[in-house]
Length: 375
Image (cartoon, rainbow, N blue to C red; front, side, top):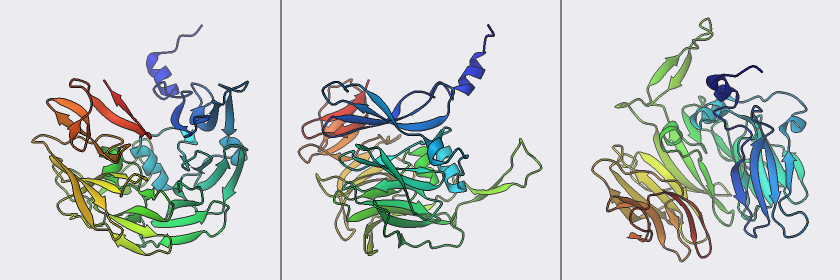
């Protein structure tokens, strides 16, 4: 038997992540779990699966819902440069289905594959392609399951879930779509703040919050390919330390295209760390200043005006934690803050977790409880 070295095994399995379930979505009624998993520990093609939790004979049954090979008729994926860059920032090296979005009831899911958009009705398994403008990036179905938003060539587009009415909600502003982009996370957010999204639906599906970023003043770098030195270098904008960051703004957009800019001072608050929008309250936005020693949580009114809900200051570093800020079960503002050398889950500024229990992320907020990660 030939023994395979650890480095080779790690490379073949993508650091032992292939074949492992990930990207879980649990239906509110507790009857199903959606997840992504490849076929084996050396298969890099992600497929969409469901786990049946309905009491009875089918409890615990797994079913593969989508195999990318069948949707692409055996062809290879064709990714746009923007999608390749997005996956690189997310440290996503797998192929096939690498992410998806669902409506509130986890009845409908959408995903991108080779720059195209597909929608699946979970109960029936019916999968169909939506006639979108390609390449489409990061499709998101609204909580009601009626519409799908997506980014394409610097613009934001919306299509009905039945495949009708594809339209441009916000037009691209620049011939060079790499300079001014709507609906995607900028490099700093994706690379440093672990925020991969640039579009957020309102709970009733009537509005979007969208990121707009402008990299016109970001320094250009020439990146060559060391494995193919004969190829010409590629121009890449990179906000190195001490140089200009992209100019980032957030906009509240109605389905008729009317929009309001969310009015925080971008020169003071260069980083948008998180956006939260749920039925429990107004949209929340967390922004940070450049040194990341100060952060504020803002609530957003219908006209884009903001109010400061919570401020955080640290002489060294204000950390960014997944899942917060968010509205709690009874409308409390949930944050993760340092309290007596402990990262604590806080409700309206007051710690609600024991000292010494280090909270790192909020996973979900239920009707009566909060699910979080701690050590």
